[in-house]
Every structure is written in structure tokens, then in C-alpha cells.
Length: 529
Image (cartoon, rainbow, N blue to C red; front, side):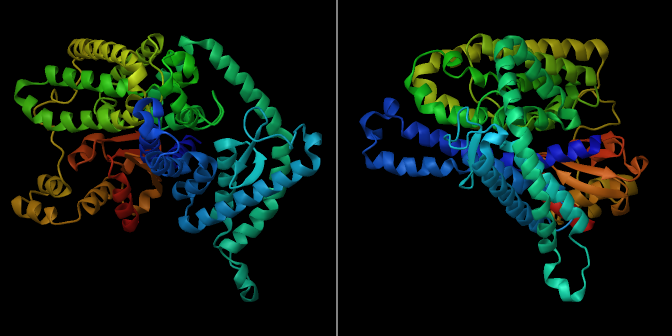
């Protein structure tokens, strides 16, 4: 079950990769169409406003069609075969489901306790999905339907029909089954989901009354679940669905940007729901503190070499918001440090909220600049400067705490390894040369290979070969595998020796930390399978 949950979490992250660019477009579009910042140049009747408004509305594509996007993207990670065809099957089945729901509610709405004549949005419980007026089931409904169709695809896509029925095989056969499955599914949705909506509204009220302790708990769990690959499941309903605000924090905050930019009221009053998009702070201020502690506690002769590792992975965390490269350098070596890191991240998020710094602070500096700093600086610069001071104080706290714990318990963090271990990431050619005594010729030959194919081939060897692999997916930085025999998987240090950032094994579930090029490595990995 854990393997399936992890695989689902990784697949769900696929559409999230689009949000950074969409957020930049919305942030810039909002900035350049805000009259309070650009004055008469951004008045609604100007060419400047018209051009930027076109760009802004285009930027809304991703957020306006989130359920559809998640539904279509899930098969990329979960379909066992013919992923592209499965995406098409999910699309048509999801639309069919919504047409069924729409028709049932238009005919028998009062029976289900739904006023289908109400306008979409707000408290009506209704939404528009691909121009279909239907129940607002958000991302959860889309993923449920997508999951059903993926299961049907994996089971029936290769079903062999009699030759005279061959036209109904493949995707057509899957959709035929899905069509009739969607009928009772739509009925169940109409019966159950209105009550779920009532529960969601109650949960929203509960979260709103918890206050700062709620922020601490959320921020701690968001970090602590990373090793299990389950953090996506925690934050997705908050960020992209209706857990705390209708439409999700990202969409709600982006739509409210003009109002927030024009007001000098505290951010906590303008957008109190945005207290939960707070993971940026540990990325921007915690990771530099950790890197400084690693450098300060490293052996003097290894510090210069260590900088080659620390600088890029720290900048990746700050600017891109991707923290696995630095967090996984110590997660397996010293799990206690990671728990401390999670607790400090929660404390920093709570402190930021306490001084009034809320907004879309879930990604890296690039994302938060477009959605927060640039459009809102004019009226909220003092709040952000206060947040900067708090963040730098916590950078010092991270450094002091990590340095003390590393020295106290002699954790073998980067730069403190035994002499026979090296910090440097090496290529597959170097790894083989070291194992087999190949020498410079072997290294030179390996350097001419496709680097992604080299990494994929090395990882394939270290997980026991293609015959030992059940399936493979990826998230933004990790190659996720399920294997038949976990005893055939090599140790973490062997994976680091071939150029990855390490490997985590939990039963038959294996996660290899590749970095931002993981999608290209996965392509080469699947070719080897």
C-alpha cells in the first residue's frame, strides 16, 4: 500500500511542474496591469493594459483548468503501458462523468440537496469544468475519476477481442467500459459529494480557528513527509483545492493580487488563508544555515572540494525551491538532524505568520518574487523587510543548532566522511574504473556517452537489472522504483559514486535522488527496460 501511495504522490506532482511558469506569467501580468503601481499607463483603456491583460488571461489557463489538468496528467505516472492513450481515455471519461453529473443535477437537483440554478462558485458547491456546469469536486474528484480509468486501462487495454470486433479494442474498449462505470459513479457523486462539501466547509472553519499552532503542525508535516514521498498529498488540498479557501490558496491569492497590491492593510487581514503556503522560508533561510554548518564542521582539507557540492544545491533550494539535493545529503546519515530541520522549519513558518508575512511562499525565490515581492512591494515592503530579518535570524539558529549537533554526535555529514570516502560525485565510467581498474581510457570513453544514458545504466545495474524492476516513475528530482528483490539493490554510497545524490530504500520501494534532470534519466532508464 505504501508503494502505491508513494507512486501516486509522485505522479500527482507532474502537473505541478507547470505552476512555476504560470505563476510568473500571472505575477508579471498582475504587476503590469495594476494601476496603483504603474499609474495611468495601466489604466483599463490603454494599449499597455490591453496587451498585458491578454498575457495575464493566458497565464490563468493552468489554474482555471486545474481538475482537468490533474486528471489528464495522472496517467503519465501511473499507466503501466501506452501512457499517452490512457491520457486520452481519462480525458473523455472525465468529461463524460461531468456531463452525467450535470444532467442528473439539472433534472433532480433538489433530491440531492443541490440548487443547480445557483451561480457557480462561492457556497453553491458548483463549478465549471471544460464549460460543463457540474459539482465542484476539485482535484479530488478529478484524481478519483482518473484513477478509476487508469485501473481500467491497465486491466483491459490489451484485451484481445474477436477479429470482427477489432475496431472496439484498445482505447475504445477501455472507454466503453469506463462509460458504463461513470454512470453509477456520477450517481454516487451526486448522493455523497454535497455532504462532503459540508464537511470541507466545517474543516475550513476549524483550520481558521486553530491559528498559529495549525501553521506549525502543517509546516512540520510538510517537511517530515518528504522522505516517504507523501508531502504532495498533504499540501495539495491546501494549495490547489478547497481545504482552506475555495479554489485553493494559489488560485485565490493570484486572483486577489490586484486588491492586495492596492491596499496597505496587513497581509494577514487581506489573505489570512495564505498562512499555509509557508515552505519557502525553510528553503531560503534554513538551507543556507545547513550548508554553512556543513562547511564549518567539514575537515579543513575537504572544505574547498565541499563548496563544489554545497553552492549549487543551496542555490537550487533558494531560487527553485527544490530541497531534496541538500536534505538528502544528511537525511540518511543523520535522521535526527532531519527531524530537527523539520521542527525549525515549522518554527520559522509560525514566526513569519506571527509578524504578518503571508502569501504564496511555497516555491523558490523566482516564484515568490513574481507572486509576492514584485506586485506587492509598493505597499507591503516593510512587512517583507521584517520577514527578511526574521529569516536571517533563523539562518543563524539553523547554523548554530546543526553545528552543535554535528560535532556533539559526530554525524558524518558531507566533508566529515572517513578518509576512504569521497565527497565528489563521479560518473559511471569513473565508478567502473574504480571497481574494475579501468583507468583513464575507460573514463575518457565513458565521457563520450549520453550523460543521461550513463546515469540510467549505472542506476539500472545498482538496482539489480531490468528483471528486478516492477515499475518506475519520477517526481521533480527522484527516480521512484518498485523492485522484486530489495536485497539486490546496492547501498546509498554506491549510488552516490555514480553521480546521483543518493538512494533511499524502504522495503521494495526505492527512490534514487537524481536532480532536476530526472525526467531525461527516466526516459533512458525506460529504454533499458
